Structure formats: structure tokens, C-alpha cells
Length: 439
Image 1 (tube, rainbow, N blue to C red):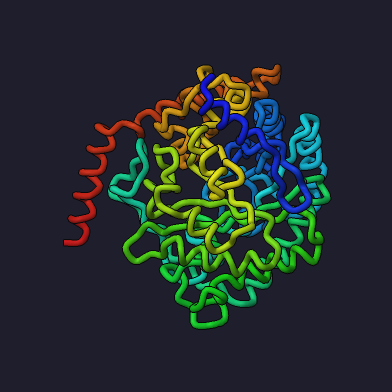
Image 2 (tube, rainbow, N blue to C red):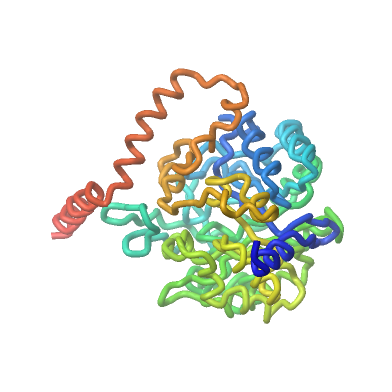
């Protein structure tokens, strides 16, 4: 093992703190909607098997995603099922999941996600809501590798959320945090990234309000400063409360990292335990779901956040090269390293890095079949890891024949939608139809 690798291993093995909690190493399982909860929103045996597999794999902290804090968030979700925190009936099941992870001496956080904002699905009498009525447009060439939307897609325009509705969301989110704490979660994270509700307030591109929630950085931060302050009044100063937020719109009319960092510095004063940095959004997905390790560092986003907030822990995304991660920590631009797709491909990744077994790593191929499966609302699987999503079955649980048959059809769909040839034909047909409808 080279001196360079030894240095990286040493740095990535060091403990660090979030509020009153010590994390044993620098690796964090990033929140992803891959947990396959029950249809009614409780953790399933598969949920627990997925998480405990990653806890055994050496992650120092797990953050769960694919969960909602409010009933409305569950109703408008573009994919299902989600894990729910909106009523007390979910606490016992959540506690069972937390206890299972704690058996491996690994802390677990819950991402508090109140609403899908402009990415939600409206229904009669239930529009989607955002800071301002700005729809999401997803189309080539701003899509990640292996992901195609023939003709592109524009989501329904959300309503501007009212001040009364903002207060209601805050109250429900604080209540969900209290349930997470009662279930034994070691901390919580507010989701303010991509084009979801909270994130729509942070950038002038998606927030042109003229009330106290729009305009200045202080005003655009207000929905989160108020929420963090309310959460702190419930949980005290030592309970970890983090924020996952966008760092750069990567769009000509968007906000850059210095602007997002200015907003974050306002929120951080209320007692954030960390900030998880999320690059780009759904309209610039090629920068969000990147195939390049450390692109976020090249963009200067962690550097801008560190300059604005010298002491708050920063969690780095889309950076998986061990030496690159160690260098970022050593330079002070990161404290934790979040792993998402790489932890689907190889749940033992942290152990392999920290134990000097890098030649054994199964690397993510970045073909993004996992993302396509999520978009089509089918159970997420990984091309490089056949066990992913089936951890409970491999441990002895039974898989119904109907699920096996369904999986075959789903696999054909995912393969077809990942074909550049087939999707190229589909794009030409859809685009031609769109032009004809305009004439």
C-alpha cells in the first residue's frame, strides 16, 4: 500500500462530530428512495436488510431518504411507496428499523421531506405548491447518461404557496421531527435540494415573491430559518439537525454557489449541525447525476460554502475517489463524504477503502439504471450488484411469484428506455408530433 493511499485511509478513518454526536469515520450513506417500505408507509424487512447491509459495510452514518413528513407530501409523491412520519402510528415500525441499525453501532438520521414542490403530482383540489409558480422543464441535453425523455417534459405549474400554508408545513414538519426522535433516530435532515418545496425559496430563479419570503438572502432563507428555530426549540442544542440544499443552479438565469452560500449562512446561525451539498437540480440533471468524481469541487461549491461558514460541517456529494475525498477533508472543504450510487454497487465500499482493500471494490458504472427504475416507480436495482434491493430475500425471506413475473416485464422496460437507438427514434416521433400540434 502506497504512502499516498495510507494517508487517504488515515484521514477517512478519523472520527468527527455533528452537534453532540460523534461519527466514527467520514463515510455517510446518502439518502435515496430505494428502501422499499410497505405500501402503507412502514419500514419493511427489505428496508431493514438494505440499511443493515450498509451499516455492516462500514458507513459511519446512515441517512434515510424516500420518506415524507406530511400527509400532503405523501399524496403528491411522484413515486411510491414512501416511508411516513406524518402520524404517531408509524413510530413503532420506525423504532424497529432504528434499533436494527443500532445493533451495528452506527447512527441513523431521518431526512425530513415535507413536499415535492414543483416535482409533485397535482390532483383535483390539490395543486402542487412552490415559492413561485415556476414549472420544471426536464429535457436533453441536460439529462444524465442513460436517461432519456423523448421530447422533454414540463411539469404542471405549481401554485404560489401562501403564508398560512407555510406555517402549516412548518408545524407538521416539526411534529415529524419529534416522531423521528421518539423512534430513536440520532438526528434529522431537512431536504431543501433539487426543485422540491424548500429549495424553490433559495434561488431568485424560482422565487420572485414580494413578501417577507422573497427578495433578499435573509428573506429567501426565512422558511428554513423559522423551521430550524422551531425544531431547535423542540430538540435542544445538541440533537443533530442538518440541511441538504442546492449549491448551484447551473443554468444561465440561475444562482451560483456564492448566492446559495449566502442564503445558507443565514440559516446556519439558527444552529445547523451540518450542510449536505447537492449540486444542480432537475433542470440541470447532468450536473446533479454526474459520472465524474469531484465535479462539485471543480465547480468551487464547497469552497464557497466554507468561505461563508468557516466552522459548520460540510458533506460532499458525487465524490467517491478516496484520495480526492481525503484531500478535500484535509483542505477543509469537507467533513463527511456522502455515497449514493456507489453504495448500491458495493455496500462494503467504506470497509474496503478503510481496510486498504481498494482492489476489491465493485465500482458503479454510472449507467443509471437505478435512476430509470426510480423514475418508472419500480423497485430500484443495480447492474453491478444483483443483491441490491433483494437483501431480505437473500437472507431467507420469500419473494412472491407475482413479483418475479413483474420484475421480468420491468427489466425489459428499463432496458428499452436506456437504449440510445430506441429513445432516439421515440424522441424524433414525439418532437415531430409536438411541432405538428403547434402548426
